[in-house]
Amino acid sequence: MEKGIYVESDCIETGSSCSIKGKVIVLKASALGDEGQSQLCYCVGGDGAEADAVNQSVFAVDLYQGEYARWKRLDVMGVLKPELLSEHERLQLSQIRPEGALSLEEHEPRYSGYSFLPDGRYTSGVWLCSEKEIQDYVEMQLPYQHRIMICDRNDFCVLEIQEGNVLFPTEEDIKVIKERQEAAPGNMDMT
Image (cartoon, rainbow, N blue to C red; front, side, top):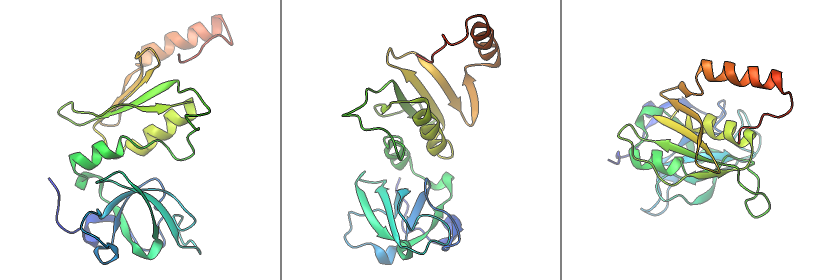
């Protein structure tokens, strides 16, 4: 269900002194042109995304339609409280590859990232090419998603997190992996 207009009290941080990169941001209603634009975007970067930035460009993905857009830092009200993100917007966010992800035209994906709503709904997986991309995907989704799952190319789960708690691998699984690595150093891979 879509909320009406977001206001400053819907934000956990406001103003130019906060970093907005890698966070769901609220655009000022006055900055929006047509009715198809959402106030909520995921900030992927730009020279205006850092705290107290001198420059003003902010690059973001609209969480209603999934389109990339450029905004001015002055158009940003603040960082949205995670609990206010709608289900539709959570699913849209789950489809964004991490900033700096390798080109899929030039690199073969090794993993898929999935994010789930509490009722189990999810959208198609996001291709991830490296362990760094897994880490970046998890970090960007963690504040907003109920459950995150990373699978390898054979669709076997290699990481599962629910409500911030790691479900897989368990501590026992990690202990077994470490023992195997010590027995045969250099042979362990997540795939």
